[in-house]
Structures are given as structure tokens and as C-alpha cells.
Image 1 (cartoon, rainbow, N blue to C red):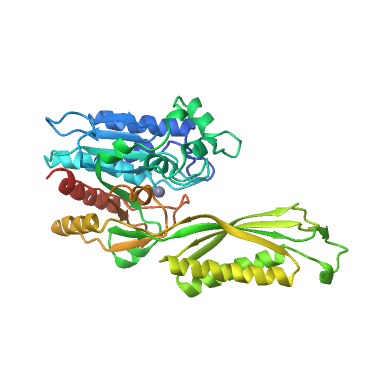
Image 2: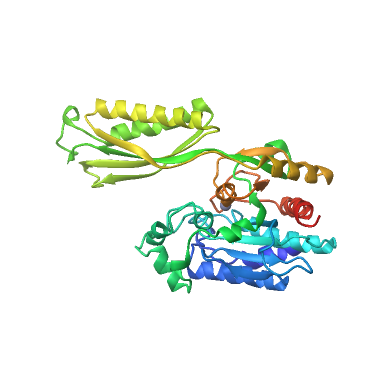
Length: 410
Ligand SMILES: [Zn+2]
């Protein structure tokens, strides 16, 4: 089957020896190798490849007898991304791109010909691992981020997006919304490894995405008074670490009591001395919930607990959102269409929400978008342990081909 060969050919690119995880960051040599793999895979299938102004890759299967190009309306696009988080897994992103090529092969085996353009897309910097903004390529395409602000984004070494793109041979002055390209797209269907274990519990190989939970990031700065760990009495201290700790525990409790998720995965302490009371502790809260009301309730509870604890320790607290993304409900009509075409082929596919962001969520603001999820036995993602069984990957390809056949070939 073409899936296995494609998968094997992509697997070595950007794999880090010691961790076994992936480091495929945008506009690096590993990224260039992923792009070359995409171009080669498209060329092997006689698909027409282009890189858009924002560095996203597109491979087009043009309908016979139609003028080439996505300029006809109603193009059907599938795909995902090839970049990774630091030490990420093999499946998050690449599964959707590899499955897209394999689905094209399966459609051809079935003798299907598209009557509207069928595209495969690989969006750049989806994870935001290098420049800090998730779904950067699709955000630029959709006009959801200011191009000048994007150009100025810098990586950990201080290299800006503009500099990195230029070094890779792409003109950063051309980034920004592409309304003509989006206007040609009638539907976007993204297949993705499930980031959770709902399908394992349901005993199904694939699911249809219902919505992406609203989510956001809040920054909390606790400012106390730096002091000597060996001489300052406990009563005299204004230690910002203590209300910070209370806030972390409150986040866990608030999430649990609301059926939501809250995580403090990043924290800095200044000056960071072992033998000193900190001057300042900065923490980032990531919170996600099934609806906006729940999300606000969780965050409100955490911030209230943080404020109370800060006051109790004589510590100043400055807290506020860094980014908040509202819920994305995928196009109900397209979702129904996926459900009925899968049901028509006897493919069981429950409908699931997700707490993870995706390019499909960004694009949903501009084009009808939908998602398919493939079972992940442990639910672990953003880790080398991320996995999908070969049989489930094959089921994903069949489901995607079924959906694409219905949308693009009839
Ligand atoms: Zn992803």
C-alpha cells in the first residue's frame, strides 16, 4: 500500500537521535527536507505543486479538461502540516499529509476522477514551535494575523520570520492574506491523529470533528521582595513562589470541577537563585473548556485564587490574557456530508470535540472546514510516544478517500 512507503520515506527527516522525537521547525534544513519530500511525492503522482506567498505547500490534481489551477471555484482541499513541536511525535501533522497522498492513490485505484480541483496542502509553522504563533501559515493565508507583525516574530535565537524566510529563499514581503486562493476553496478536510483517547474507549478507528474547544493563554506575574533564604524570617518574607504554587493547584482544581483543562507548563523565577527568595515569578496558564462560559469560569476561579494568595503573602499580582481563541464549530453541512458518505461505506465514525487547535480551525473562519481523527491508542501526543496502528492509518486513508470522492468526484 502506498501509505507505508510514503510514511517510511518521511520518517527519518528531522528525527532527533537521543529522544526519538522530531524537530521539524519552519524554515530550517529539516523543513526544507520535508518540503522536498512533499514536492517529490506530488511529482510522483503528477500533481502540480506550488508554494503560496506564505510558504504553505499545495499539490493540485486538476480535473481533466479543466483549465489548470485552483481558479475554478469549489476546490476540495485536504492536508495538514509537516512541522513539529520540540521532540514531537511522528503523527501530529504528517499523518494528514501522508494520508492525503495515499487517498489520491486510492481514488485513482478506484478509477475516480475529480470534477473539481483536488488539492493537498501542508501549512507552515502550525505548531508555532519556532516563532511562537500557532497556525502561522494558515493565519497569514486567512488574514488572521498582521503580516508586518508576523515578519517581526523572532525565534529563541532572535532570528525574525522575515530573516528566516529570506534565508530559505522566500520573499517575506509577500506574506499576507490570499483571498483569491481561499475563494477557490469550497471545502477543507483535515485528517489528524487523535490527541486524546476517546476513540480507544469507543472502539472506533476514525471520528469526525465536531468543534475545537475555546482556549487561551493567560500570563500571571507575581512580584514579591527578593531576600536571603538563610536569614529572612518566614513572617517577614514576601515570596512570590507561594501564591504561584497556590495558583497552580487552583488551576488543577478548577479544571477538574468544571470538566475542563488547565495547565501551567511554563514558569520563570527571577533571579532564579537557589538560596534566595524570588523577586518575581511569571507563569503561563493554558486553559481550555467545552464552551466559553466554562472557560471563563475556570480562569476566573484560578485568578481569584491567585489574587487571594498573593494578597495573603504581600505579593503583587499582574494577570491578563495573552491570547484567547473562541470555540470553532466546524461547518454543520460539511460535517453531515462527511457523516453520510462514511455511513454509506459502512464506516463507523463517532463525532468528537477536541481541545487542540488546528489549521482547519483557522480556515473555518473563511471556508467550510471539517476534520477526521484517527485513533491514538494511548492518547499521548506532542511526544515521541504518539502513535496510530497501521490498520487505523489505513482506515483513515479509506475514510478520507471516501469523503474526497464524494466531495470532489461527483
Ligand atoms: Zn497537528
